[in-house]
Structures are given as C-alpha cells and as structure tokens.
Length: 139
Image 1 (cartoon, rainbow, N blue to C red):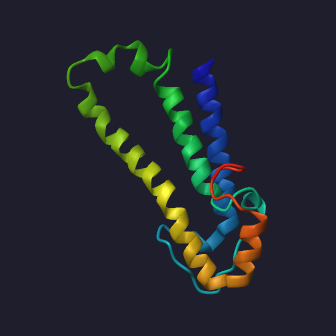
Image 2: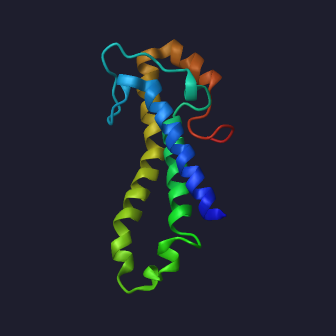
Image 3: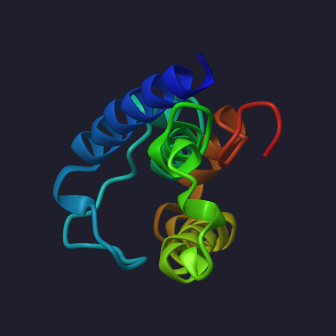
C-alpha cells in the first residue's frame, strides 16, 4: 500500500508540476531571471503557494522514494542494498536528490527578491494574498 501511495503521489506531483510550467509558459527558465515582457503569474497553482513547482518537485521525490524503497520494490526485495558497494551505485541519485532539496529550500527567496524588485506593488499584494512559499500554512 505504501508503494502504491508513492506511485500515486509521484504521478499527482508530476501533473501539478506540469500545470505550473504551463502557467509560466515562456517565462519558465532554469535560471532565476526576468524575461522580456515578463508578467507576474498569480493564477492557477500560484494561488496556493508562491512556488508550487518546487512543492510538486519535492512531492515527486517523496513519491519516488516510496515507490523505489519500500516493500515490494526491486531495491528492497532483491537484496541489492545489502550487496557490498551497492551504495556507490545509489550515491549519485541520493546526491542529486539532496542538491534538489537544497535548491528548493534556498531558491524561492532569490526568486521572491527578484520578483519583488521587478513587480513591487503587484508582488506585495500577491505575497499578502499568498503568504507561503512552498507549504500552505507552514512555509
């Protein structure tokens, strides 16, 4: 059951993340940047938290962990993790996940600062209406 929950969580998070990217449209970039004719997106998933793509990314990783590292998963059932050296194979994936989590926890502040500078009053109204960056009611 936990593994199935992980799969459903990852699928739902992928759908949510896709909605975020669609809402951003051509404004989506891998860098923190303002593009030509940039507009502040305050609709769709951006009415819940200010950085929903990161939230859904974290949920996707959590779902993947549940899918791959719980009873019924090949990693668990095969005994692969008990093989000497197995963690060397898994380490890059774990490192990438840790770096993603670090980015998700630090990048929203940078994006907020840039958007606030660019859209001052509009951003202030939006931040008042949507006070949380990643988790409604928490952060």
